[in-house]
Image (cartoon, rainbow, N blue to C red; front, side):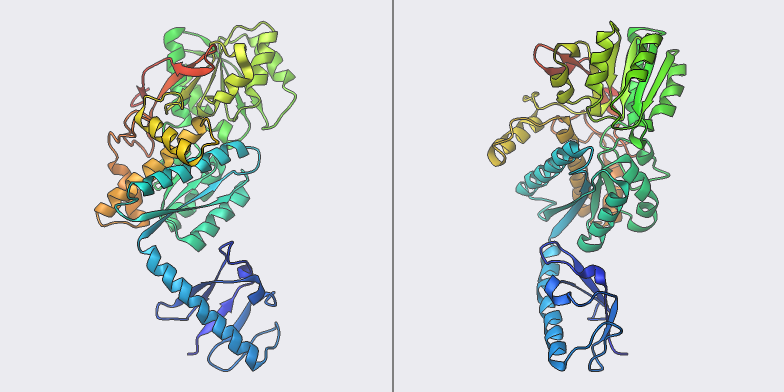
Length: 456
């Protein structure tokens, strides 16, 4: 049978942007992938067929002269040369892909997390990569939009063939979970600490680079129960997948610890007028308020408003509430503010991994003077992924499934002091500590030692 090239209009893109055309049926392996320029396919506005063996035939699109056909064929085979060279190069190159919210409501976290991944991979390559194999990093902007993010994920999978991926949100992870489990079967990290993403039955290829949001609530509630038995507690969270993730578990744990849940304030992300929620908090007079599902705002605004009303409660946050930005915005009002964080901070410069990152940053990004906890999470995602790749490679299983399988071998994995030693449990690493604001220094300091959550 003659070889038939199917040219999809979606392949109309520039070489630099990495768009590809796929032509089944050509070559000894049954498919050819080549990079294409806009100018080469500018007339192909609809799916078309080009019969390469019977002279020339294009369906429903346009007519070409024999000279143009010859030029097109020359172009196709010219494109095969760099692709074959890339294939040879890729034998010693491993790709990690990511979809980050570079823009959108959580753009700050995406930019910082993406820089962390780039730095972690660069540092790993300086130290030999994956047992001598170079690591390549590619990413797309998911804009904190689940539709855009899932399409970006599929684009990277199709064009770049990564061994592992990192995603931008709880919603993205949940949306892709079934396909990753049944089709892609690759190790998937995330900016999320969602309990569902660490569910080994539902999402066996996903992991959380620390404790889940539920675990973090567990740490805070256990701390509260010890400090003030029977305390009144309020939850203040966004009406998002991110905000709602730990709440059902937190309610159960409240009852188990004999704490009193006096209020749940639920707000749409981006809400400006919080007067009703703050008035309700005032009327319920909690001893502790726990924030969940926000990056920074509206946490400082809520705390300021409550202090203006004379409320004396202690405010707390999970990982995304452990950012220094909150302390900077609050100033003296950050007194007694606490948060859960599974990683050390930039100012803990006696920690080997922090020292290493600071030295790398000074050399390669001298304009950067500080990295927040968001950066440390991005760093940890890559540390876990690259360690799994090294173990898979040593076992002769450097495949998507082999890398995912290696996750289960992590026991007391040393992270250079960035965290407590990591032992995987249900595709998460359930260890963290409570940190407390030092208003005079403008930093967080440990309020507890590392807490392992083997039991509640």
